[in-house]
Amino acid sequence: VQDFYHDGTPDFFRLEPGQKASAHASGTVFARLRAPLGTVKAWVESFQDGEQSHTEMQLEKTDDRFEFWTGRFPYRNFELTRYRFKVIVPHENSSARVFPKWFKSDPVSSQPSSTRSVWFGQNGVTPFVPTLEDDFKIAPGTTGVSSEVPDWVSGAVFYQIFPDRFRDGDPSNNVYDGEYSYNQHPVKARTWGERPDPKQGFREFFGGDLEGIRQSIPYLTDLGVNALYLNPIFKSPSSHKYDTEDYFLVDPHFGTNESFRALVTELHANGIRVILDGVFNHAGIGHKWFKSGLEGAASRRFFTFTSEENSSYVSWLGVKTLPKLDYASTELQDVIYKQETSIVQHWLKPTRPAANDGVDGWRLDVIHMMGEGGTHAGNHAIIQSIRTAMRQANPDAYLLGEHFFEATPWLQGLEEDGAMNYHGFTWPVWGFLVGADHAAQPLSLDAAEMVAAMQNARAKIPWAHQLAQFNQIDSHDVPRFSSLVADAAWNALGAALLMTYIGVPCVYYGDEIGLQGGPDPDNRRPMPWNEADWNTDIQAVYKRLIELRRSSAALQRGGFEVLHAVGDALAFVRQLKDQAVITALTRGAAITLEVQPAIKGRWRDAFSNEVLETKDGVLQVALTAESFRILILER
Ligand SMILES: [Ca+2]
Image (cartoon, rainbow, N blue to C red; front, side, top):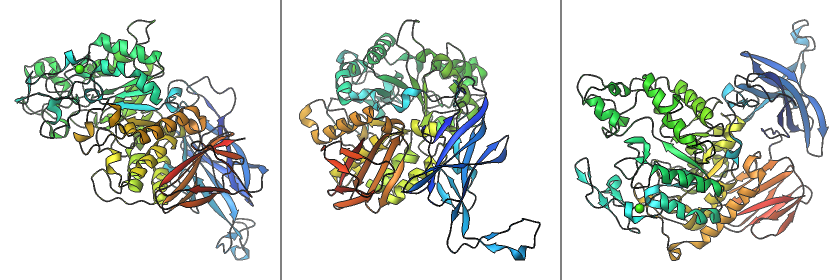
């Protein structure tokens, strides 16, 4: 346990009562800091109108291990508010000096100090002034309406479905062999259960569809998930459908617009939300805007042609089948997101006022690349406008950005609610449990290094976004986690981290039954529906972990504090007021961890029901080799 602690939960941070109405208010923040015994003085250093201000804190209470200091500091709601703590603490061998009357006495008369100043921000304690980017941050509009992260997001457990590979509920709509050609190659129909063929890739089809998802609702509710992220569903000639031909039309091999709306209604009736994959950086070469643009229509301006030549258009990473959309065109902005009838708003809104068939958010593909003139110029303004448009159509819509890398600039309150958290979760976990990064190059992190990587990422973003980050241990873009870990037991360790770490967990379809898979397209194998093919051990682990996540406010919205991180072993606590959950795990040999949670009581093992009690402030957590335990506080 670090002595210093602060987070965005109500025990440590809240806005003064009555400051909830306006999205553009100024006001006061109450902050509480947990500090070591013997702390001499503490301040909040915050920033207003661009200038730093100091607010002195008062000692509120002391227990046997900590002091709690409180203070109130001003903020303006329309801008990102940064703050950190400056604290004077005892320090042996301090090189500091005390000047009784600064600038008014002889410096030679100064006395050696037995204290020093330290600063505490989201990336920990430093004896020097930290950088702004590691400050605690309050997202603009935290008390208002327009910029809040939707409440439901932190309570969600997502399930990612790649529609062609999840379930074939209606063989009559399947692509058949040679039905059409794509880039002069005929498409190929495959049989459910076969392995994807790297030579066919996006030209092979297994027949999964919306009806298959509908038939699987009992399976999904039994698993316990309550939100779906669907890979693209709109008309496209490929099986991945990232080359959209018509954003207003569900692909006929998946179903119809009507069957999709009916599916959303049925999912909602079963407590399952849905977000769609919006591929708006580029269109497919078969989109009518592009085809008519080649013939000189006005929609030519939706793309970036560098000359009169029809072949001179900018495309995604040079892939000519994916011409890049140009948001310098206000007409394009209108049709993609600005108008009420735009694509983004159309699918968020119900088909009629009483219907419940609008989707709950968008995952935007390569969101950081969208921009003007064939570049990402103007990107942040575009994403801010998309957020505004989404909130207009559905105030509870979740804006999720796809970034394979760091997403910090998009997570400062005005743009994304959350990002696909490869940077702050997936890669650190891979460093600890896989031993490689996304490029299949060696990445070796012990427990301390993993949590340092995670903290370093978390430190850059406001609390509201930390809770809304989209965590996965794998996805359709990387090999299956279960195929990467050297030891099957480590697969369960990954699942435990996924369901107990801060942020929104998402299970890639099939991970819960141990589906294997290498790089794309092998990571997109058809979901086996013969239960004899399921790994029921990992399935039981997933179901219990999801149940725990769904039932625990501490796991959904609690703080995060590391209790132990050395070598192979890790323990951390998630706490929300008087609710707390400890996750303890080791990837190595059996070990007994001695941890000191700040909150005291009896802890019940969520799997074995064994009750553990704190003795003299120490909780002994015995772990067998390569195992995890989840301990729930009982008061
Ligand atoms: Ca089908």
